[in-house]
Image (tube, rainbow, N blue to C red; front, side, top):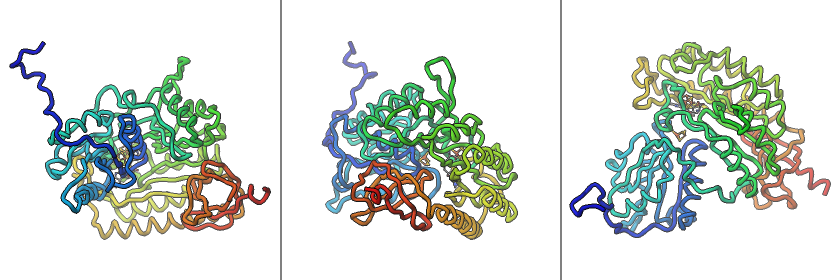
Length: 459
Ligand code: SAH
Ligand code: SF4
Ligand code: F3S
């Protein structure tokens, strides 16, 4: 028993504020943040809280933030400012995600209305942090506990959508010189095989038809299959493909260095694995790739693409690009345009380099001016957009299977995804969200396709 003067176990001050009962989560950044946001919500539901319909209705607002580029961070602070209400009150504010990890308690000093700061590896402790914050003092938790959050989170509940995310791998050991992710998400970990199969089964039992496996380097995932074999991502994909009711499997984001022959072969051998590959290259210049610490070359990247296309000729290729990395010359940039012409993308993301505090590239000489970055981004995006239009145009006249995901803008319209991740708009009064229907594609825009339902024609 504690002696009355023993202060090693001082209880937290008694909560004074009301316990929040309605939460609202906004996730920025990558799909993993979306997944984390959903799991936070499920955990708060298990605590007896409810999701609010809007931010204004909530007494706990969680901003699940992204630190990848400067703009993403600036947005968080402007969002915090906007949470103050006309009558001067405000909800309890929690900053979660990668900005929380990178800036920690500094956030609450800069924005005193913030009550909770919680990093991406500590959000299973949100209920305790909420209790602490009720005493009026900011509660900060940016631990990266050795035991991962996954074991502490409640089992998955029924999902509102037919397509769900499932984090299988987290963290990054690659240390590209421009990138904050190794610092905000920590070292690479792979979740255990059995846990993933169980989570996938729970999702499918709840009506999910498509699962996208997530990881910062998803193809670095490894796990023991329970039969004494160490498996790569393709081993997990093969087992998930046996789940009846699961129709489609995707994975993102892959790193070129972890693109094994086994995973490439899965694109040929596993029909439920969709013909889509997001494989960032960042630059087409070997000099810049070296300065980025990417540890692959333009040629080795293209060789991977050749192998993937040999295994699955119709694969839709996607990528990420950075223009204006320190020292990038016009010739380096033209090498990026060349690799795009060679690789031929169905879809891609391109960004202006953003200097991130604490990364090696932030201290490199020869930072590129905003004007040059703007001009290069425009030229790159013109080329990528033309490739995307061409890819979509190639679908016109084809019959394709579409997983219906949501209501369209028009009342009679449904929107789904083709195997190649194109959005397809279709009218079919007999179909429902979650159905897989056959569609003939009639026209293509830059970002979506329009088709007619073949099940309706034959009905
Ligand atoms: N782990 C993934 C993606 C990480 S972040 C991968 O390696 O592919 C997503 C994308 O953001 C990166 O692929 C990169 O294109 C971009 N990005 C990362 N840091 C950036 C920075 N400092 N400035 C601009 N873009 C950046
Ligand atoms: Fe960032 Fe590179 Fe890791 Fe991707 S591989 S998360 S770009 S450090
Ligand atoms: Fe952003 Fe963190 Fe994802 S920095 S891109 S939310 S891993």
